[in-house]
Image (tube, rainbow, N blue to C red; front, side):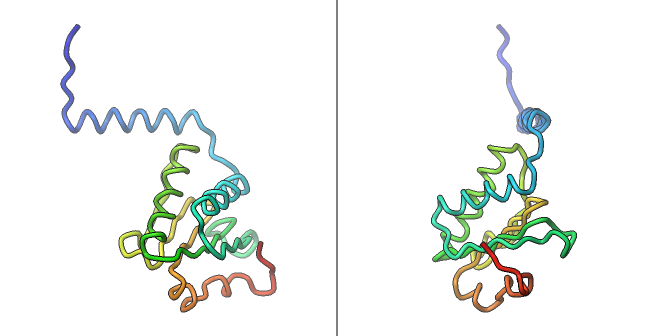
Length: 139
């Protein structure tokens, strides 16, 4: 049997090929299914004051928005990391994230669902959900 020596480039290519195979094999979840998965993940990781906002008919940026609070910069970052890892594992696609390094406000963009995770003080300052809720009620 021949030994196979992989260069970093071929390892990356192999990993990308495996990721493409996983993505091709798994259909993209509906926005409602993805929302339920996200809410479950945040609940499991002890996110606080989770609010979901239905964006359908209000904007084209997504179908749902979720706003949650972590108790510290470490928890805010950890909530976002665990969420993106679970989505990658369950559905085979990666999410775009912003703000993970500072941990004050992390945005996770899944395409259909946008997730904002804040430290309490930062959430209170921006009050982002008030822009989108209007007269609607949140769950």
